[in-house]
Image 1: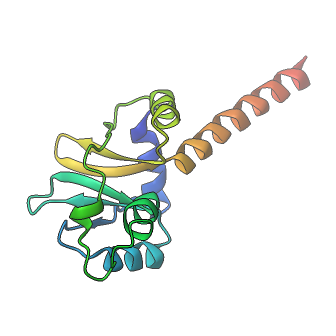
Image 2: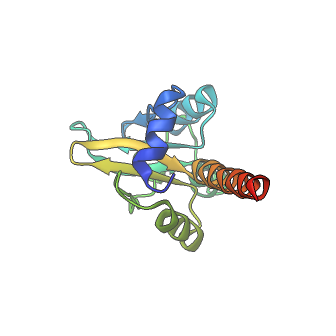
Length: 148
């Protein structure tokens, strides 16, 4: 798998392509509960028209809520979300995303296409895709050795 759309197709086949989103008016407590229920590490914050406004992650909770001693029941996601969201497109190469994630120390990247938000790529998705490529390469080398 070399581009984002291939990863999204695999996730759709596995039934895990849906992107969890919240409104900026959602409380941090509600967002944390949603993340716990869905066993995910981030939520995309979308406006009323579906546009990406930000992202809220476990790291945001730790740094901007817990460490700042804010009340999660009365703090809105909008107050603590990351606003400058790095996104990619379905055509973005996975190696480009891996470099960006490493340089910016991020683990989740929303995928935005012509029609808006279409998916989410995580570092786990990149690691899985890389392991698939390596497995295929090993299998090809083993087949070559057997045929020699």
